[in-house]
Image 1 (cartoon, rainbow, N blue to C red):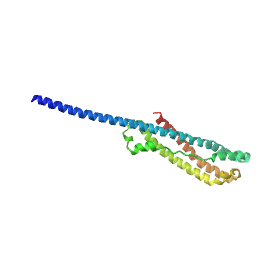
Image 2 (image 1 turned 120 degrees about the horizontal axis):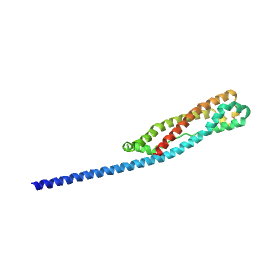
Image 3 (image 1 turned 90 degrees about the vertical axis):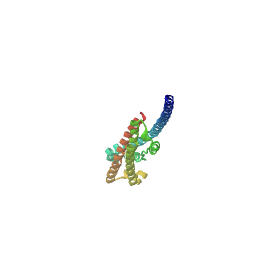
Image 4 (image 1 turned 180 degrees about the vertical axis):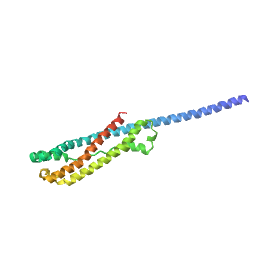
Length: 210
């Protein structure tokens, strides 16, 4: 009797150990898959963010000449009008060059969110930064870019004739005053948009450096 008890006890322990080892191996494989999936996601997002960063810098570089011209025109419009109309025309042409706004790449992020993969990743600090960037910062940036585009569209349509013919120096005092006000209305949003772009670059760098 004792012999059978020992035998069955041993067989039971072997079965339990086999199940435990199988369960452990399965968990180990799942963890490896999850780790590799997380690494792939982070690498893909970082590649997207590198392209976003390059795009943002191009947008900022397009804003810079407008910023410089705006400062001159807002302070020297009348002086240039009466004393140096050629320079006035040149400056307004620079300000009137096309405007660019930023549109982020969402591919890698949206793919992970759609598959609900992002909720099981281990690097919570980095994942939270990525979520904040895409769900909050990018959303705000797109809204501000849309407003900047709307104001630019208003400005260019209103002065389309002057912009096309480069006849800025024909503007009378009242029209110059109105032009400056409209330019200020546009640039106030563009300046805010530029600040948002720079803040976004800082958040992107935090993710890329982690």
